[in-house]
Image (tube, rainbow, N blue to C red; front, side, top):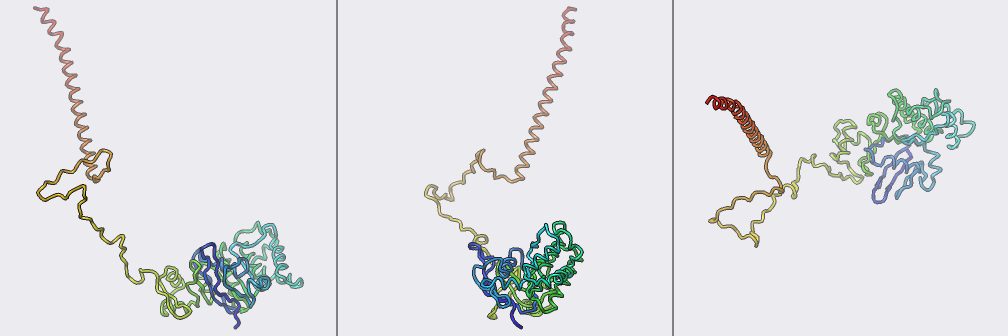
Length: 362
């Protein structure tokens, strides 16, 4: 079977940062590729370069035998592209928008009506074909974008997260549509998604990127053989082991890259800066001669008031409690003294008239 997509050494640099670094892979006609990777891995950048939307820094890409950068119009005639944000015009009706896209794609006038009806039915948007796109929900807009991608029956479909924003029923319908397109054998499909169950259900091959680097490119069964030696495991487990660096995948020359996660090897390397004990210099300084054993050790000088407080929390709590007790005792003593003074004054006041009466009697 002829190769439909050929990518070799594809690289995109933004200053010194490589969004995609030396990516190479091939797809035969009729194959469906699951394009996986965390956010920022380079998936969208790669798809934009394949569609001619973004020029690469280096490398080559061919679609249906045409070089993407030397024959961009020939490539675009053979590609249906659904970007992450559907390229729809909000002030047009669904049917008018699809008619506009059909003219751009070069659909013959006598076939245009039939082709628009096919796309409307396939994407399940025939019931809203006379409505303005700006009045549709996000899910319907996503399906209108999918309808324009399949318009004209292009041999290559590049779909960037086609089920985003859809409700469960719509997701099932879109998956069914992709499955029908793939089973016809007339379309080579690149499907980018974060839903791994979609890849397991729809795709024959998997391409996994991380930070612009290719981690794996094989069938799901091939990945099981390389990573888990044939042990049955879900795509989720394979994906996590690769992304977290817990597995190695054989390269093109048959060598396997070592796992990058130290947890897989069970080895922990001591850090010299953290684990090594600090050396203590026992030599006396010239300004301070070494103390002899006969001389008594001086008492530590009290810390200045503005110096650092080296006391423990327990010491601080004890000090606070002692201060509170002392303050309570002083307040109690002051109150007692005040009471004694009042009593003495009262007794003096009572005794004064008695003495005066005694003097008068005399």
